[in-house]
Image (tube, rainbow, N blue to C red; front, side, top):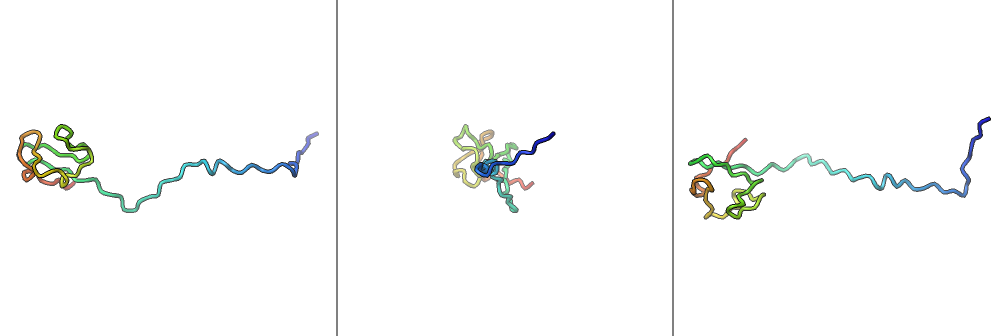
Length: 89
C-alpha cells in the first residue's frame, strides 16, 4: 500500500547552505562603551550633546566636548567653553 523510497546512492546530499547564509551574530561586549558626556552651559542652560554636535558652528555629530576647539562659544549666549559643566548622569 505505501511505498518507501530510498535515496539512490548516486544522489549526493546537498551541503547545508542555510548554515552558511545565517547572519553572523555580533559578539557581546561585556564592557560596552559609555556614551560621551553631555555638557551644560551654566549661563543659559544650553546642553551640548556630542551625538548631535553643533552643525551651525561646524561641529560634527559625534564630536566630544573635549575635542571642540577652544575658541568655540555657546550657540545660545556666546560664552566660552569654560562656562560649561559636565553632566554626570
